[in-house]
Structures are given as structure tokens and as C-alpha cells.
Length: 484
Image (tube, rainbow, N blue to C red; front, side, top):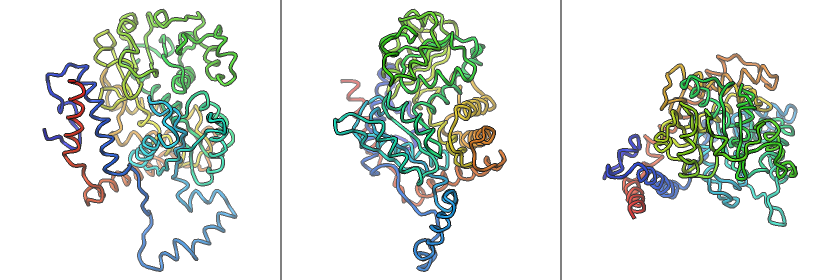
């Protein structure tokens, strides 16, 4: 069959005789097959193009030597001038050691390039932010991954960037890397797996609870998984108004609480120990017990589809909210969670309703931080971003299958940027004091330009349309696997 290359009606390409689970599996396999083929076809996702005009031979003397000497000496006199005289002010480094790539684990130093290039592509198209993928080898002589190597690397490269986006670094190394770099660097250092996921999760949760008629301060919340994402989500929910006494976090060994000597005894787990000290006062050990009567389940754990059991959801409170956000396969299929009684179900995937994905967060929050030349991204800025997304979504209308804005809603990113910039100014971490309207207009213009440029490259044939055979073959392979 001929497949629309826009993939707008993705569900329609699959045969009607597939069961719901077979269709979900086929969709996942199709997207994976197509991704591999498309990456081969394009040779990756990112290229470098000039942003300045080259009007004749002598312009090389302006952009390079001898004219560029004036830029070097000007920056020598004022290092902050580099933000305006180079692309540093709009440039993000996406840094990873590829030790925890999505749900695929340690993929080797270069294994994260596909994800890091994807982050760079989304930053440009969604936020009007330039970015470069930097995958590093963090292994020491003993073969073990050393967080100190990432820390030193980022300190060394920070003069070339306006912000650092940490990505796919395994825990507990990710906590040390973020905490040390946030204090040591004079530019924002942001861990998207942790802070970005927490930001968009809080945004989705705020609106989901509104629809369920419940208050964040009164909701009983269970979190399955105690990695970088969920530990940060727990912290941000508490800072945003959630009650830690009504919160339980589970890792692979059970509930986190002050009786967990295995966590207390390992200094690397200081973030998890903070959760132990602040939540689960009843010291509930088993998730089957902790989830009974819970209003919310937030799972960022082992990819499913049977990590979260339907019977757990059946034991939750009426109008239960379930976020099953493991990638690439959620801990439970959305249709199975609904059948078990969930009122609202969200995943990390865009091919199901209610995508709770940090792609709706990081382009906007980084753009806002860059435009006011912030020195860091605080928890207050992340919480403000979450409310900005939730408010934007509520204004345009929310429903149980549409709780939060999606990546194709262009204006959400400019709104986020403006709100985050105002929070940075209010907290005293911004170098520039701009008005909200100034930030909004600049962000909106840059985002529109980035989308227009990509569209022009496609129209002019500089970016070729993928051949129909590529899509058809990806679908055929997926269906063959599902049907055996």
C-alpha cells in the first residue's frame, strides 16, 4: 500500500484485523524499521550551514581574516561579548556518555549519537536553538565510567556554548555530574532526562488532576522507578505543591523509606536517600500495597508492556491517572490501562494520546534561558515552565485524551521561553533584563525562521523526500514479525 510520507494518519496504515496489542507492537516495529532506513538514507539528521551572507570574495575577509581579528580582541576585553559576537548565545551542547540511552542501556560512547542529534534537531525546529551532539567516552583506565571525566569535559568546552544539555548518563553518575556542574559553570547546565522529564510530567499532572477533580496537595502519588527522571519528578512535584507524606517511590527492591539501609550506605545514592527521608512515612515495601487507593501512578521504569499490571490499576482510586512513560514501549499499553479502569493514561510516545515527553519542554526552557543569558536553570524556572505549558494547554482546551500541548503547537515554546526568562530575571540568574514581550517576540521569530528554513530546504529539494519503497518495506517487515 502507498503510505503518506507525512505519516499524519499513522494508525490507518495497519490492517484492521490486527488486535489492539498486535497493532501497538506493529507500530513500534514500523517506527524502528523506518528510523534505521531513514538514518541510512540521510546520513543522520543534522548539518551545518552559514547564517551570514556571502556576497562576494571580499566577504571572506570580513567573516574570517583579517576582519575577524577585531572580534577576537573585543572578546578578549569582555568574555561575555562572545554571546553576541558569535553563535554562542544561541548554542547548546548536548553532552552524553551514552550509558543509558532510552531503554537500551549502555550503547558505547558513539551509541547515543542518534538521540543527541535528535535532541539538536528538535531544539532547532521547535525552539529556534542551535545545538551540537557531543558524545564522550567517560571510561577510566579500569573500564568503569567516571563522572569526573564528564565534569571536566563540560568545564573545558563551556566557553563555546550558551548552555549544556546533559543526556542519557546512567545513575548515580548523572546526579553528581549535574549537581557539580550547576555550581561550577557560568552557563545553564540542564539534565533533560531528569529536569526536562520532571517539568513536562508536572505540567501533564496538573491538568490531569484538574480533569479528575482532584488537588495536587491532596493526591496520593506512586512513582515506579527511582532513576534520574522519577527522583527529580518527585522533588519537583513536592516543590510544586504535592504532599511528600502522600508519596511513595519504588525501585527494583521495593519502596523507598528510611529503613532502606542499602541506599543509606551508598554515598552515590544521595538523591535516592533524600526521597527515602521525605516520603513513604508508613515504610510500605510492596507496590501492590502502596498503589491501593492511589490517585496517580507515574512509571518511568522497565519498558513493558507488562511491567505495570492491570490489577494494580484496578486497585487505584476512582478517576485514576496513569503515566506509563518508559521508552520505547510503555510499562502498560494505554488501551490495557483504560480497560483496567484508568481515567487518564499518558505515555512518552507521540503515536498515542497524551504524550508526556520532554520535547515539549526543553526547546522552550533553553530558549528562554539563552535569551536572557541565564547563568543556570533553577528548579523555580522548571516549575514555572511546567505551569506555562499547563496554562497554555488549558487555554486551548484539555480533555482526558488531550491533557497537554504537543510538539506541533508552535506557540507553546515561545510562551515557555518568555515565562522562564521572567523567572530567571526574578531569581537574579539572568545577565540581561528584557521584558516578557521582548523575549516572546524574539523566541517566536526565531522558531518561525527555523521552521521556514527547513520547509524551504524541503521544497527546493535540498532535503530529499524519503522514497515510498522505504516506508512500505518498513511496514512489511513490521507486519511479518507481528504475524510470525
